[in-house]
Image 1: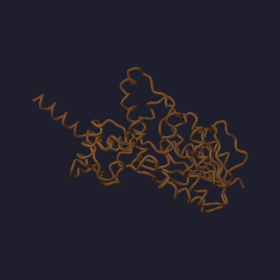
Image 2: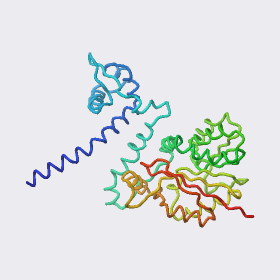
Image 3: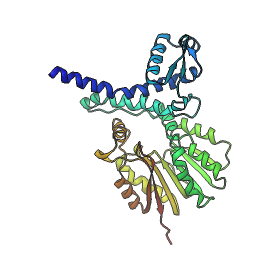
Image 4: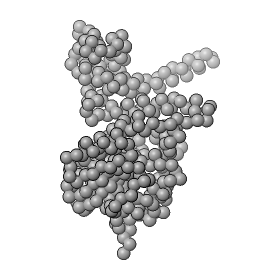
Length: 330
């Protein structure tokens, strides 16, 4: 009976691991642009020769793809990509594949390292130079949903001075600057590589300026009507977060708005993905826990900012946009 129970448990874990195959297969296809290679019916041999990759391993990848529906078998040993709209687009395009890259190269290896970290009581170190580009590209995926909520702020006054803290590759700024040409946008980004990408992306826009700068060392020469801060809080130690809100409050004009996009932790009541996401941040000595709603309310209140409310950006990842307003001194 004990052996039967062991087998039942083993089968259960095998079944629960099936969804991982979809992510693994899509990640490999994204990294090597294989979905594009099989866009039209071709043979494994032809793709291996054209891409100069291992034919036997490619065959195994194709077999998995056929079994999970990412690829379809055709006649004469030819295969083609299934529903292309469900799969990540080629790497040279704006694509959802970058989230797979971040998950497979950052999140999953870190979570798999938990036993060693717990035994050794030692955490990993997040290499921002190595991963900054991938993280910046992942953040751009939020633009489609978050951008309309951010643009709504600028509609109220189309001649604003706007600051974007940790502007990444400049995706938000570019789109907003094109839509609101009378406003002036300044983005600061700590990564030199990412800042250069943002400068290149926005170089044709006269109302945009990108600076490579550390948040704690930067001092603006004017105040702003709107400040955006997207996916930054988890890089800030808990004991410094109140100082951050105080600092940003001083940079706002009266009636100015601080808009924060961040995943939010709900502790033990968090959805599974959010709980795992928070565990990922805790696995690094130089990354920090996700904020809780109560903390966000407290930081704003102590910085003399009125909480305007919280809106969902991506429910599955527990991403929200929280907005605050600085009261008029009159």
